[in-house]
Length: 452
Figure (cartoon, helix red, strand yellow):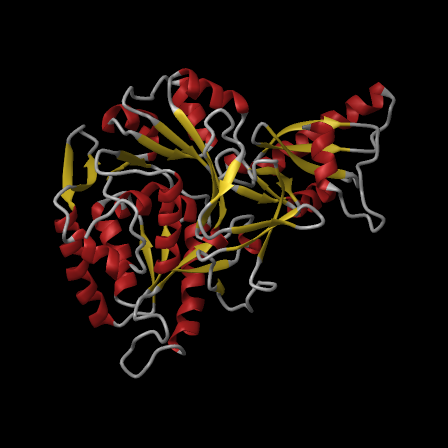
């Protein structure tokens, strides 16, 4: 029976619970401004019916194109119930992702065929398939993360234990479900605990969807919230904004609080099925408490490691990446006297942009060094955007200005070859050498601190 704190062990258990509910599961809107709704019981029956059709096809891996419709959600749940591994393709994600997903799916199919029994069922997982998510960076640096329905449901339960939703809530779902944060926080969490999930109508109408659907909760990345604030597009019924996926500027938090909206920060990774820590003290949302079951530790070098029941099964086609059952996140952090986790930055070379997208800095730096013929370059994050720092520049202002002019031209050319959200937004020039190790590796955290 439905409970606001029940922990579900699988999608099968969750969907069966949908059958006992009489409230609205999903609300959709069309381009003409009309709405339609689907009740939990009807949603469950659609999933179960479709799962029988999928089982008859005996597929191993399916790419489900998510188009913010009920049918897309039915496809996702039905394929997992039928034993298929699911890769979610979203037309809103960065260019090239969906093509990469199709290629990865074919490789995954070949690996999965070896794990079927004589009845076509996946061994060792109760018959359910996995969801395959990609870590970001660039396509060449992406890895395929294997998550079970159980780990995703446990992640939703962990979040519910820290920040509860219920039957009276409407959650605006306008994050991409091809990312674990969007999948869990903007869809699965709400459906697991009886809220109504409002599917955003269209990416171009995102800033109008709050006024259209009147949500009480919005999970978002900082760039989305900034856009909605700038266009005065937040509805008066909104009581909670959950921010994740990228660092959030303090001024955004202050503007939301001025409107009487409670702001929560979440921290997690694809490898941990999304969130492992959520803020509780509304006056300090950047200070986050570990979720139930999340054993978070700060290592000697400041890196955050975690052991959690929401952990991935591993990377597809790779050996497990755990040490003593712990995953080393690559993030730097510290605990305060209240046991709250604070994030400090990235240990490795991946930067998280304001829209949650990520870039792999060495690829940028290598490409720019070649086209600009400058050997001392580094990419950092400033106000959620990528900024290029050019070190070892001449102190003579005339010579430096000439180099800057040429550098701007080459960076503009480089930007035209990549998606807009990942482009270099500014250039900083300095006569100082960029901080490096004895082996010549860039000390990115120190560089970030110097020019943040």
